[in-house]
Image (cartoon, rainbow, N blue to C red):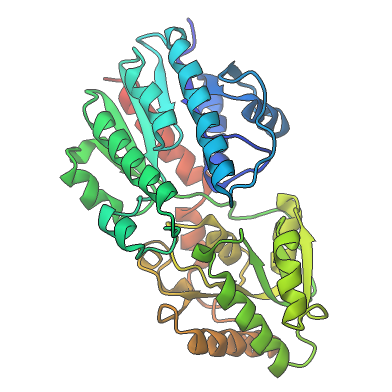
Length: 397
C-alpha cells in the first residue's frame, strides 16, 4: 500500500539562518516521517540546504532557481529584495501545485501569504496550517504602538494585511485544522469564523533534556542573552542593564550569543563594557545549551513576543529568567519567570541584580518549582503528538 503523502509549504526560508518557526516544522516533519508518511517540501535552495543539514529524509519541490544573496533587512532596499524573493517562490509554488494530489495532506508552515495561499489553492482535500504569532492590529500599526512596528510601518502593514488574508482564506477550506502556539489566540480565531473542533493548541517545543544536561558545568557568566538587534528585543534596556550591573557587581561577566557583534560591538565599547561582555558569535544548539548552563540569569527585555522558545530553553536548563511582563508570557510560562512591570527599566535592573546575587549565593528560585510538568507540556514529543493527532483527524475525514 502506498504511503500517505504530506507536503510542507515552507517558502519562508531564505537564508542560512534558522528561526524558531523553522525548527518547529523540522520537528513536525520528523514526526510525520516517523509515523510512516512520505514527506515533501515546497521551498527554495536555502531550505534544501537546511533539510540536508538536519538530515531530514524528505523530497523537495524547489520554488526558486538559486538561494538569495545576503541582504541588509535594515534598509528599504533589503526589505524590497526579500519581498521579491518571497513572491518568486510563491509563483513557483503556484506553477507546481499539480504535484499535490487530492488525497495528499498539505501543511502551511507559517501564516504568511506565500506559504498559506498555496495550501488554500492546492487541490488537496485535507489542509493543515499553523499560526505562530498574531500580527499587530491596524490601529497598532497606525499608532506604532506595538514594539515590532517600525517607524515606516511598511513591513507591519504587510504583516497585518497578509495575515488577515491568510487566516480568512484558510477559514473557508472545508477540511482543515489550524494549530496555534498561544492559548490567547483561540478566542480571536473563533471570531474569525473557525469552529472549536478546527483549532488545536500546540506547544512551541523544547528538548526537555538538552545535550549535556547531566554535566556539572561551572557558572562563568552572570548574564546571558540571545536575539537579534531590533527595538522589539529591548536592546537599549539590555545594554543599560549591563552597564548598571558592571558598575555595581564585582567580577561581572555577560555573554551575548548570536551573529550580532558587528552591530553591537561599538555600542559596547562606548558604554565602557568591553571588558565585561563576551560575544560568542553563532553557536551550535549543543553549545548554546552549554552556555546557558554556564550562566546565572537570562535577561528578556523584549517589548513584544509571542511564545519565545528561548525562554523555554532557559527554563529547561534551570536558568532563571528576568522579563518584562508583556501580555503573552503568563499564558505560556506562568510563574516560572521573574516578571517586572513593562518597561520599568529601574526595576528591571534591580531584579536582574537580585537574581544574580541569589544564584551567586547558591539560591535559584526555580528549585522547588514543578519544572518537570512544564518540560513535559512543552516538549517536542508532546508537540509532535499533537501534530500527528491533528494529521490523523484529517486523514480520517
